[in-house]
Image 1 (tube, rainbow, N blue to C red):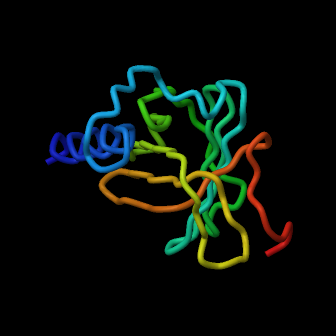
Image 2 (tube, one colour):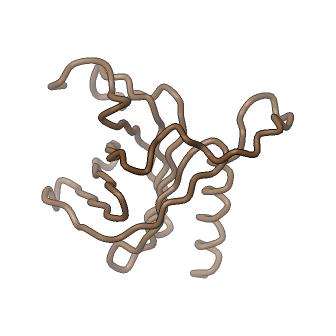
Length: 142
């Protein structure tokens, strides 16, 4: 069963990194460069609430039950339409896909420049992402 979930995570990661549009091939062969390797990626999601950041090869993931978060190492992969980060958070596999696209957290008036899809073990979580170079717009304090 674990292999099935790993396969699902890989399928989600690959789908998140494919070119968008009408389904026709864009001919794109260059890896996504919309987020530089030296940028810190910040993530947030609701239902359940979660947040975190990735800087280089280190990630921090937090929840209301663990506000300081857990730190762990990740590997980065740039696909055709996004970037993903993979690692191990305790007993759970952590696969985060960041893709360009306007995103709302549904709780504030903020608009984020990226969507975030997280597979945490077998559970999928959706959220938004931003960087210092590509910040969200809207209120600083929601």
